[in-house]
View 1 (spheres, rainbow, N blue to C red):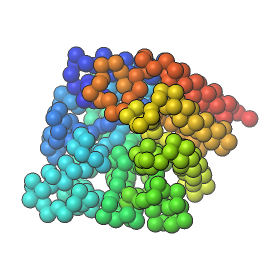
View 2: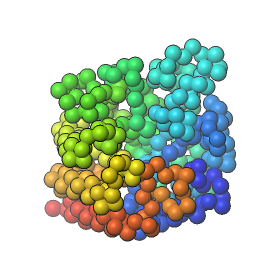
View 3: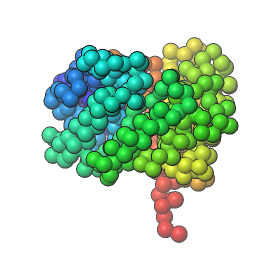
View 4: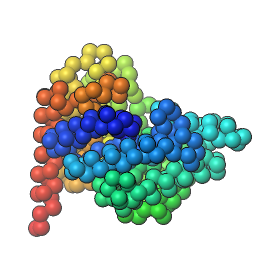
Length: 353
C-alpha cells in the first residue's frame, strides 16, 4: 500500500481498497511499514529515509482512519521482498561487518541496531496528514515485529526467542499503548516436542509456544499455505491439515498461552493446478466457519485476514492470491457474510450478563 501511495496519482487505489473493504464489513488491514534498500524504498540505507515514501505511509494511515479500518503494521520482512533480513545483512557486509548468514540478523549487534533504529523511526513518526505520532495513533491496532520470521541455522526456536524478547521489550519501551505481535506462521519448536507433529513435516526456527509466551507479546498469529507447504498433496489432505493446524493453535492459545489468536494470513492461489473460483470460495468458507465456531465456543480467536485484497489497477501486486472485491461478487459476499457474523457475535459476547 505504501509503495502504491508513493505516487500521488495512484493514491485513489488505496482509497478504493479501504472503501471496498469497509463496505464488506472488514475492520482490520495488515500491511507493511518497511521497504529496505530496494527501488522506491522507505529506508534507503541504514537510518536514511525517503520522506516522500514516509508521507505515503502517512496517507495510508489517514485513509484507513477515514474508512474505519484499523491497521496492523509490520516492521521488517523475513524474505528479500522489499529488502528484508537479507538487505539488513548486506548493509552490514557493506559496512565491513563479518556476516556468516542472513540469520545473523537475530544475533549480530550491528544488525540489531539497524532494526531498533527503524522501529524507533517508525513508532515516533509524526504523521504529516493527521499530525498524530504513530505511537499515539488509535488507527494503528498493532505492531508486528517481522513478517514470517524463520531461522534455518537454529531450528529449535531459541535464537528467534532471544531476538523476540529483546525487540518486544524495546518496542514496548517506546510505545506501550499499542498491541504487539511477532508475525509468526505458527510452526512449533523444541519447547513442546510433542506439538511438532502438527507442523507440515519440518521446522523453520520458530517456536509457537515459547515465542508467544513472552510477556510483551499481546496476541499470537498463524499463517497457513497448505498449497505451498504440502505441494503435491490432494485438496482433501491440504484441507485436513488446515483444520488440524487451526484447531491445535486455537487450543494452545486458549489453554497454554492464554492469549488471543489471529489467523493473519490465508488464501488459495489461482496459479494452483486445478484452481477454480468455487473451490477457493469453498476453502475460504471452511476456514471462516472454523474461525466463527472457535470464537463462539470460547473467544480467544480474534478473526481472520485473507491474503490479499487489492484494488483494480494493482496488477503489479498480483501473486495468485489477490482478491479484487469489486470484480469477485461471490467472494465478496462470502467475506461480507463472515464479517457480519463475527460482528454480531462480538456484540452478543460483549453484552453485560
